[in-house]
Length: 268
Image: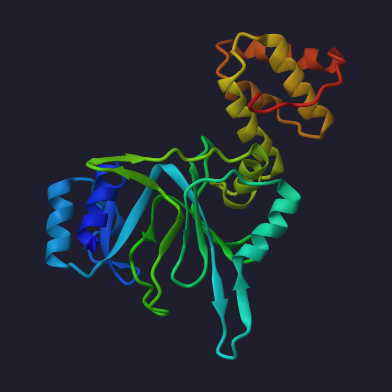
């Protein structure tokens, strides 16, 4: 049977920074910030504490939706993150399948690519039973043992692939834009409004529309204007256009006569 050290080294070889934990609490004095992918460091940690649980730091590339499950002393369900997630799916659409784990308490961890918008970790959102893990936050992973239930964390869809001596990351799915927009609204840095959320979504369009495509940007800005978002100045700043201020305002004023009915298609 593979040891905790074997699992920890495999995650580290796949490029995930890991840290030893007692239950859910890091054993390192500097906490999650000291998580490492260094094989020698990881090996030393788990030789010193062979029964430690394994934590994985999200880092800049990973966002995890953590659905909680909890009963009270009478056995009544007081947190059901999966039910809350199903309700969100009806509103926001389906989520792509990717690495997923069952937690020791009966919750789920779903791993995604971190979107290129400012999102912070949050707890108790989406019906008060869903947490967002991102950046300098961590998750407990297989084969760790839950400190309360004694149940193991288990992958239902694996995070890494082990083929003999070859270990590699499995690809993480991208979040749909409806979900990104919702995440920005509930967990965006500096508590953005709906208008700021639209600007964040718009910034990602820079991946598929070149900054010099003035007509395309006019159409997007006009669609936002018709939807009630008066975001022209931040819009012009967000699309990396190298124009002077006078030119930008000329372009903004011209939008009022640019009468096109379009819808915004993201990620196409």
